[in-house]
Length: 237
Ligand code: 6PG
Image 1: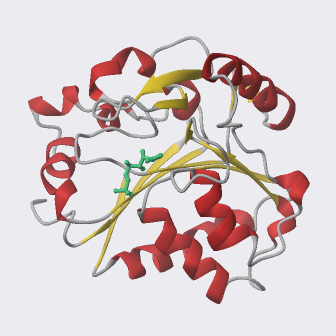
Image 2: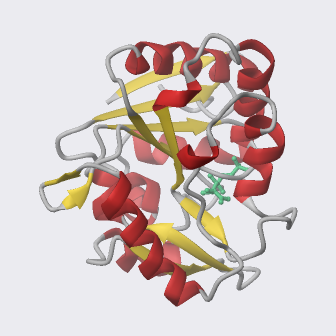
């Protein structure tokens, strides 16, 4: 595991981007599962403003680690956020965008998306192996849409599962733990003081960490990186 701490979310995004560019140079085709929420928004704005001509977008195939079960036009949609901030600003071929159909029946979509992965992601050791799974972490220690009340999704056999947000009850389609842990690279981008305690618990391997899904993301053959800002890393010794 490698940890990189930066002064601000913007510098976290810049550090992650430089790291990603090095990864991209080694591959002709690159598969990435994006995270949602607010942290990636900083990154996508940076890519749109500073990297539109630096990154060869045609080699990247975009997937999602999780998606809210809402239409792609909904403000809650991770696809919408990515499309508005990134895809409409840089030249990503539409055939490289493999969105979860949030407007569909969640159970059916989880099955369909698994088939999308089978067709478009390398299958290694019997599971999709993304070149990179990008993750955030919620203040409760959830990651992707694996929440503390659904820890069974960390070991579920299906590659994609229907999850439920613990407060809102919103349905989500999420990659399950075995797929995430089969990735060649997993990178957490975690910023803000609301994550400080969970970051300390997980990265310092405290006993409480077992209750947090993000603590169970330990790629078996891949590399794990935590990109943090100072606020999120404030309690790390
Ligand atoms: C989502 C994300 C989720 C997110 C965390 C952190 O769909 O919401 O995939 O797992 O990464 O909730 O969100 P913030 O970056 O907004 O804190």
